[in-house]
Structure formats: C-alpha cells, structure tokens
Amino acid sequence: MDRRAERIQANNERFREANETIRRQADAIGAEMERLPFLCECALEDCVEVLRLTREEYGAIRDHSTYFLTAVGHEVAERPVAEVVARHDEYVIVEKDAHAES
Image (tube, rainbow, N blue to C red; front, side, top):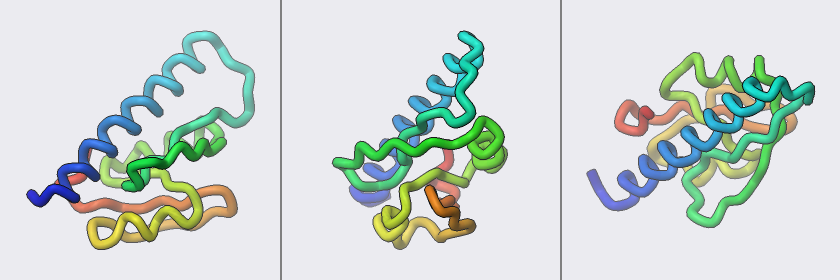
C-alpha cells in the first residue's frame, strides 16, 4: 500500500471512530437534537468540517462498511480510491475501495 493510501486509511479509521463516539455519546445522554454533528471523513489532512445529520442519515451510511461521509466538494480528495454513491445538499457519500474499510 502506498503512503497516500495508508494516510487515507488512517484518516478513515480515526474519523469513523470519532463519529461513532459522537453517536454513542448522543444516544447515552439522550440528546434531543434532530441533527448531530459529525466529522467529515475525507482524505484532506487539514479538514475540520463538521456536518449535521440525523441519526437515521448517519446510520444509513454506516450500514455499508465502505461508505464514508464527506463535505460537499471534499469528494475530489478521494480520487482514485473512492467514488461518489450519493449527493445531498449538505454532504456527499463516497464508497472507498475495500482496503479503506474500517
């Protein structure tokens, strides 16, 4: 695996775990928020974008182990390891190669 792919995989794991922690904590405290803050899971090293999704929207992404949440415009950083599978006004879902699974 080349350095870029290794970095992308490390980002995937770090941001995916952070987002899972956000979801677990919101559930644990019974957060009444309609939309929760999730971190962009893109490959940009300096990305700090926060995206607001419902639990259901985020859960639908997590139902697919190769799907990742990115901010609009950040999907270009995913080439060539991912392709867009869905576009929404506030976020984009990309599917990353199997080596990017976490």
